[in-house]
Length: 118
Length: 114
Image (cartoon, rainbow over all chains, first blue to last red):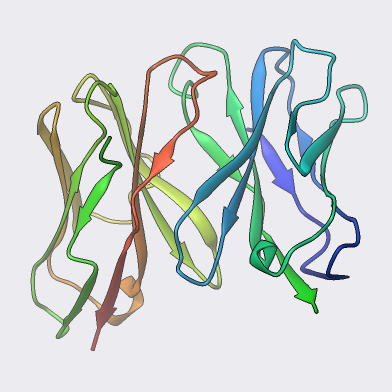
């Protein structure tokens, strides 16, 4: 079974600064997808960014980028020019690309609470 | 386009009562997922459907929980009888079947069992 670990329960950053959230995962599969979701106090689950394991290039979405290290099974999220609206719980998630009953299931990490200081 | 729609947004009921949570997935999506979120256990997958067929219900905690998807545009999660430990936020999510497509979440139902 796959596991996802977020070792930082809480992080904080000053507005306009850069912060990196860590995520590691354990899998024996070669085909999979990784996601970061943001959950603000409104409790919506908002997709931030995704990465296909077969792609070597790190995904980027505006101020959000990832550092995907497949051999190390690491998938960190970098937020540049942090804004007050970035304050939220961030979840790392793994999705199998293989067939069978695991296909399509998301396995989530425990989450990291990000505080942004003005 | 409308996103995943869940109802009710909040539910407060007494222990022993039947609770029904509802979900309308995004049109065209053929996978639907039910999750539960608690402080202690985080986000847990309860059950998911592909093309209206339950694929994996290993996350359903007990026989008191049941889920149905009678058609492509509607699913229910039922708890009968409810217990205080069922109090949580329940999310529904949908996606296309292919693994690269992300899951889109509803706003969740906050369930409180007194």
